[in-house]
Image 1 (cartoon, rainbow, N blue to C red):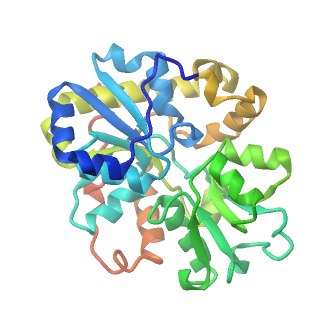
Image 2 (cartoon, helix red, strand yellow):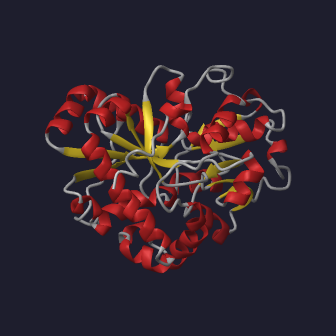
Length: 337
């Protein structure tokens, strides 16, 4: 059973389109409720969203916030652009990708200074797939096509001179569906996050190929810090709702400070029970994830340039194009109080 204290539902894009997303977005805005779509609410990379709700920090700011969950970040992005939600908890790299498509979106709080993503190789395939240099002809799992996991997969393979035409990217979602894809050998390897990583390691079904849960591992893989999980909004919404944006940012900054001043056990105790069916494993996964979180919600100084470099490495829509990074994020709201 799901706790009544939280409002989470899977929001299907196709269904929303049928009922008219734009009107839904207008009604949500008029009602005073702020709806946030999370790109997989049980993922530890997005833990600040639910933790803020559980700690009561949204209410402390006088905000009525509803959290929705959509497993792939690219689908959450579509909900935002359609006006069905006011904000997304997803990867910062979408703001750069969207700018090249004429969409003005910016991150107003940064939760993760690194992706927290891990390329896992199935134990069955590990004999022939020992690094990203071996992915030619293989099937690689991503949460969704056009998602941040697909961006990172293409970059890591491209570093070894392997274009996406020489392997298959299969959207398999996250958590249980990702684990099933590994066990059923539908993918040889794939990119996922905690607690899925720890679950696969515990059962012996997969091994770590590339680890981007720490600053050190991320710098080794990508050449710098890679701001990832964040709260992003349409710039026009932030301009028109500065007070609400500042309140959201302040609530999340309090949560980031809570994370940095409490143990994994104390943080886990605040989270819903159905997020941690194996509590010991959840706490262990959380401990492994703590280094990824920012303490103040601010954008790391070298982060945007690293993300642009990664995206430019394989994405023809971005390569060679001018991107104004100053428009893809702001520290204005996290510094407002």
